[in-house]
Length: 101
Image (cartoon, rainbow, N blue to C red):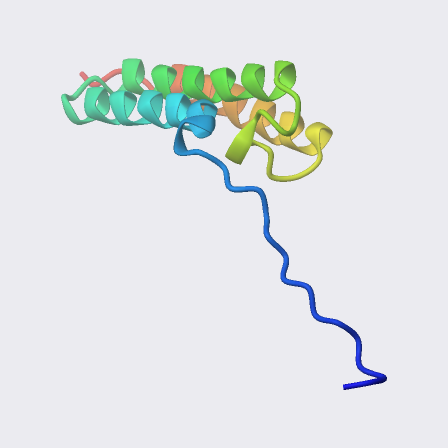
């Protein structure tokens, strides 16, 4: 096999499941907020959902990219802008919707 490049298998570093605690914490907040919405507390549940996005924003802000796990999707700046805009707009919309009469 002269003249052929040697093949090396790439062995990515295996990540442990508990290293994904940031996204697990955010998703737990999302699940709790959806349960609250299903119990006919739309405004409270929506604000809790916005709080989950704020939590994701804060975790992405303070954690380095290699520790943020699945919260690190794009560059840090893009992730923070997207999370911040979503959290703010969801909170505004939750407060804007009139309560049922």
